[in-house]
Structure formats: structure tokens, C-alpha cells
Length: 147
Length: 74
Image: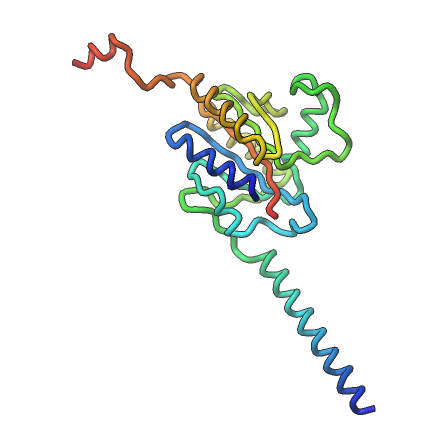
């Protein structure tokens, strides 16, 4: 849950950025017997967040399947071990990423979430800066045209 | 003999109360309504059937920076 709070604080640093955040809650620990309670869901209060409950860990399974099909594509030297669960992890994708059958290659991914906020912040900054129209200050000719 | 019966009865009642309380707590944990913060879409439950929709939601926001996080609720 510290990861959720840390991520929420990070999102608050980018109030005007065009972000979409998909948060998947999944049972991993023995205490994860049900979907997160309202109090837990409230840890992520940014309006750009979409929250999911994934009781069968289908997203994790799909990620592991994609990664194990082509580990090198995801900058891994070898496949993930049998039964691997992707959790307490965060991934950042650029504006041109599309998720067809396999997960697109993230600009950054890592975990545990609470420990990778600095890297996640840097990646978000890079991806936001790379988006078309990211520059907010009008160029000189545009400024002249406004007069 | 009577005292023993009373003790057994009291023990059974206590055990039943504990079981009922545990059941109620479990039911509350399992079935109590979940609310996401204002402005967010309602909490969606994923399954293998809805995975395509999950990916479509990712793709609909093409042009935006996307973040995917996988977390455990406790």
C-alpha cells in the first residue's frame, strides 16, 4: 500500500500532464482475500487513475507470457521463472505505445514501486517532454502572429 | 455434572459467537461495496474475457503517457 501512496504523490507532481494510469490490484499475499477496500482505493485519488481488481491475475499472466516469449525485447537476459507473478511493479509507456497481443516495450519499468519513484519520475518527465506540443512557450513567430 | 454441562454449553455458545463474528467480518471484507475516489471510473473486475477491453483502454489513450502499476491490496 506504500507503493500506492508513493505513486499518488508522484502523479501530483504532474497535474497538467496528459497521463493515463491503470492500476491493477491483484491477490498475492495470503491476506489478499478480496478486492481492495474503499480506504485502499482512496490512496490513489488522482482523476487520471483507473483502478481494477484482478482476482485471477490475468494481467500478470499476460505480461509474463509476453515477456517469456521474447525476453530480449524487454531487455531481459532470460525468461521469467515458472509461476512468476508480476506485482509491486510500475511501467511507463510513451505516447506512441500500443498494446496489441503483447505488452509494448515500456520506456521504464521497475519495482518495488515505493523504491523506484525517482526512476519513474524521470521516465515520466522524459515521455511528457517527448510528446508533440510539449513546449508551452510560443515561439517568436507565433508570438508575433498573436499581436 | 451439571456444572460441566453448563461449561460445555457456555463454550459452545462462545465458539458459535466467534464463528458468526468471523463469518460476518469475512462477508463484509468480501462483499462490502467498494468506491473509488470521485472523478474515477468505477472499480472494474478483470477476467480473461475482459483483458482485451483492458488493452483497448490502454490504446484509447494513445498520445498520452501511460502508466501501468500492479499492486497487492494489503
